Amino acid sequence: MKPIPLDGRVYLVGAGPGDPELLTLRAVRLLERADVVVYDHLVSSAVLDFVSPTAERIYAGKRRNEHTMRQEQINALLVTLAQQGKQVVRLKGGDPFIFGRGGEELQTLAAHGVAFEVVPGVTAASGVSSYAGIPLTHRDYAQSCLFVTGHLKDGTADLDWPNMVRPRQTVVIYMGLGGLPEICRQMMLHGASPRLPIAVVQDGSIATQKVVTGTLADMPERVARAGLKSPCLTLIGDVVKLHDSLAWFKPVAPAVAPAPVAPKKLRRPAVALSV
Image (cartoon, one colour):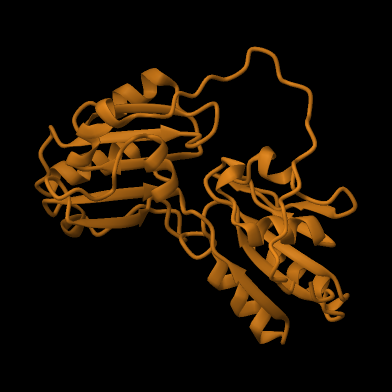
């Protein structure tokens, strides 16, 4: 394996939807060797177990109406750490280029001449839907898939409603739990059937996963009754009908938290990879 570069560098790494076994090998190796890890709220504790015990950890998480750091502060922090000659892992839930603001952060790094690398992750849409037993596409139900953010930069949810109600597609909404009643209402106003199936998944791919299914007409009430909390992913379309028969993942949260176990070291391949 080649030595770590002497100059500072930022690695924009996708942490996947939560299950640490969905991390890429590249992500694990970088976490084991980083000087600093700047991580988000959506990164699970099990993923953080791979971080070197000597690395500095900086939490930069954002939740609705609760930001530890503004995005501009995070951008500046990454530049400063890299200019200090550190190997920095910027760790984001899911994939950093799908509603992860990864592009914004890299634009700042590029403007300051900071070297960077992108390590893709399993995005929530594919990871969470797989663990919920809901295929995003299916020849009988959906020939296209639309990814949408339910929380725009200005705080509104003024979405492309005509495009979202097109037939034979699956709509995946990130960060849409708070606006779910309005999303369902607007989709019905724009022609979607009140009986269109919908699922909301909380904590997808980890032991506390919860899946609530219903229709556009009754989903807000069902979600409120279930007491779901962020992070959640919303899936809309006829593919949701397959959940009952394809739900293979049976999450069982332990009654007592187990003692922490040191993460297993991954076996290195014969071909060396540079960091």
